Each structure stands twice: as structure tokens, then as C-alpha cells.
Image 1 (cartoon, rainbow, N blue to C red):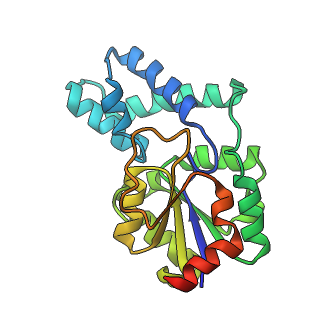
Image 2 (tube, one colour):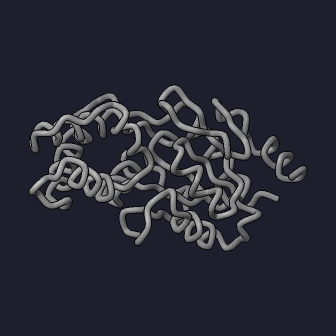
Length: 221
């Protein structure tokens, strides 16, 4: 029986990727580097500090990773406050409310910083539905390491076999798989070049995992 749901945030609850893309590209200009689309796509699901460490290594930069991270966060903060394009993913609020009303324990497990998580949750009034929030930026390991989902599952109070992860990135799906938790891969229009092959189930619309439907899946697994 499904009792706990662990949500990724970017690409699942809200599409902040366009804002992140703008913020990163402004930072790339600020430090004078050209990042290929292929390299940028490989960052999906990783924390900002780990991305900045990779950039410093890859481009042999003299700046510290923390400096790059702060530049990017400043850019993102400005965009978050001023860019009108930020909206919830279609159908996600309905599924969050339905799960909450059926007494599932909801936990947020995102690679985003807690500042970004809190900003999103306050902007869209989501705190009322979730019992806990975890930021990969606060943990020792980043996705695809399973640490964040191990901690998130523990926060539900239920066994991992009674939990489910909803993810849209290759690294997130790998992390859920490594944690031994049933993973729904959300393949949306916002997800580019991600690998869903090891997800337990792949959807493109949240109506596919409505409460009654996903409980049937858990009964059969």
C-alpha cells in the first residue's frame, strides 16, 4: 500500500528551469565561459554547488565554486521576484491535494537550495500539504546518490516499500532506484534528454497516478 510520496520540485511541481537557465547563462557570461547545451543538460538534478565545482574543474577557473554559486543565486533571486513566467506544472496541485486528502504523507526532496524551495512553497502556498522538505544542497551527497530519498522516506514514518518518488531527471531516477524506492518518471514537455529506462513507471500526465490508480499499482507490485 502506498503511504508516502516523495516529490522532486524542479520539473515536477514547478518549472523553474527557464529561470535557472537564464540565471546560469548570466553567470557564465559574468565569469567568461561558454557552456555547451550537452554539458548544461548533464547538470540536471544536481545541486548548484556541485555544478559550480564541475564548472571550475572543467574550465580551470580561478574563482571558487562558492563565488559562482553566489552569482547564480543572485541572478535567480532577481528573476524569481520579477519574471512572470513561473507557474505550477499542469495538474500537480490537483494530485498534491488528492494525495493529502487521502492521508498520504508528502515530502519534498529537491536538489534546489532551501531558499529556493521556501520561495516556491510560499509563492504557491504549498507548505500546508507537506510534512517535511529536504534540500540536496544541505546534504553531503547529491543525486544520483540516494541520501536525499533515504532521509525523505524516513521522514514519512513508513517503510521504503510503501513510498513512491516522483522525478523528472536521470539523476533523480537513479537516486530513487539506489534507495530502493518505487519511482515514477514524469516525462513532460519540460524534460529534455532524460533517461527514464530504470523508472518503475513513466507518465506524461498526473492523472495517470491519481490516488485510486496508483494504489492499484502498489497492490500488484
